[in-house]
Length: 219
Image (tube, rainbow, N blue to C red; front, top):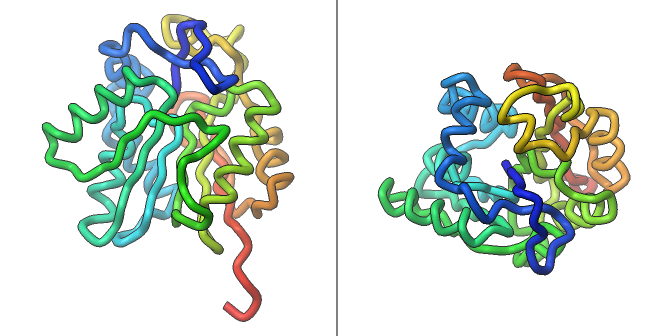
């Protein structure tokens, strides 16, 4: 999940929040109308996350989804999370320390993920793609495709309604637009992923697409 204050982070063509991070979790609460825990569990269900899996959250914000994923995968799994904002990562690390959660948070950009090929079973991209210009968006999805293992899954979630039609503080913070479901599906397909499922998330006007990498023949 990503929110912008109109500044560009070094080494990324996307827009990144550097100020107001302390309000981020409250804004997530507003977005989900007070049901943030249920929303995070819904995302994990849509991503089909199971115990023992390796999970990556790109554009992780303050780490709430990554922490929930850590609980879901258990001791046999791993969770990594990246964000281009050092301030977001610092807050996520403090939250993980308080929760006693083993999540590897690091500052990094989506155009160049700092992980080897075929490292993860599941990757999450939540309210992040619409903040990227098209070339960076395409590069991001190619990078996600690279770090997913064969048969691995990407869950992409974004707004269906253009920013100009939304109202209030959330609209101002996510003012850089939306990402229509057909555009998400085309982006994933062009990157060599197979769309497995798509549709409304069930929260506001959010939509999702679940896609998978090819599995080698005979498996």
